[in-house]
Amino acid sequence: MLLTEREKTQAVADLAWLILASGQTAVVQRMVPGERLYGSDDATYSDIAEIPLELDETPPEELSGKIDAVADALPDADVLGEDRLVTDSGTYKIQSVEAAHFFGAVTHKILQLVKLHGR
Image 1 (cartoon, rainbow, N blue to C red):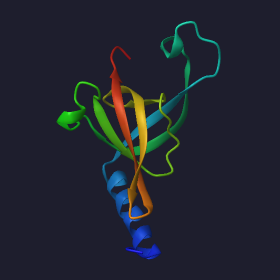
Image 2: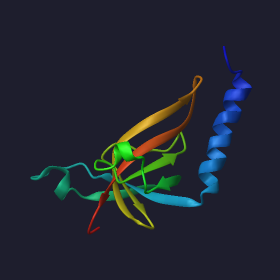
Image 3: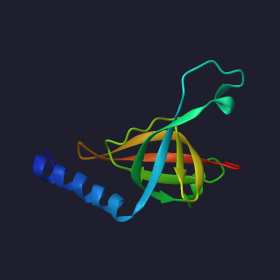
Image 4: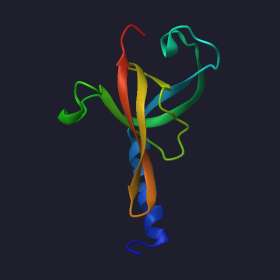
């Protein structure tokens, strides 16, 4: 065991503090269940929560072209792929949600985002 439970708890708290210190929030919108003719493009979305996050609209070069932004969210954030995030800078579709692990502790979630233009 490389880290004690206390050290893991501290790592999670430190990352939470950094995310909260960014002062950024987003409204999570989830697709309303129902039949759609054109997939998710004609779906109706409803607000489910407002979450704190740290949004980086200049993702690393290896992600550019596919991803417009990356966000870090708290580990208990209720977000799924295909959800939308409405921020001050626009609306994004969540392409993927990945838990970030640090020696056995999930410290935060990494969200890869595509900007929805005209929304």
